[in-house]
Amino acid sequence: MDIVGQLQEGMRRFSAQESRVATFILQNLSFTASASIDELAASAGVSPATITRFARSVGCDDIRDLRKQLAQASERRAKLAYAGQRRPARRLARQT
Figure 1 (tube, one colour):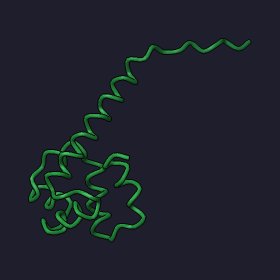
Figure 2 (tube, rainbow, N blue to C red):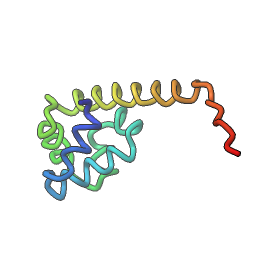
Figure 3 (cartoon, one colour):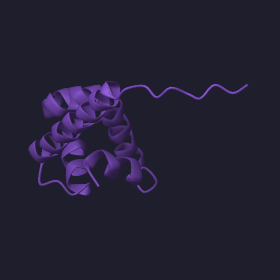
Figure 4 (cartoon, rainbow, N blue to C red):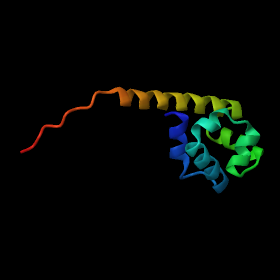
């Protein structure tokens, strides 16, 4: 399971602050993958220390590791979306 799946799965067990961070990340995946810890904290409405604790709570070594995993997940999801758009449309059998 990638980091996005972990965040979605973890929403049930996160504290209020962690849920706030996770929700922001899931809604802003591309931004989060490249944001500084201060930008992320300000955007999510939490402190930089909360971001650091959150990164560790989801199994990352630090914020850099979190950003790396988010960037990888974002790239994978973009590739899957692009591949899905390139599939030829199936014609539906006409029912009469």
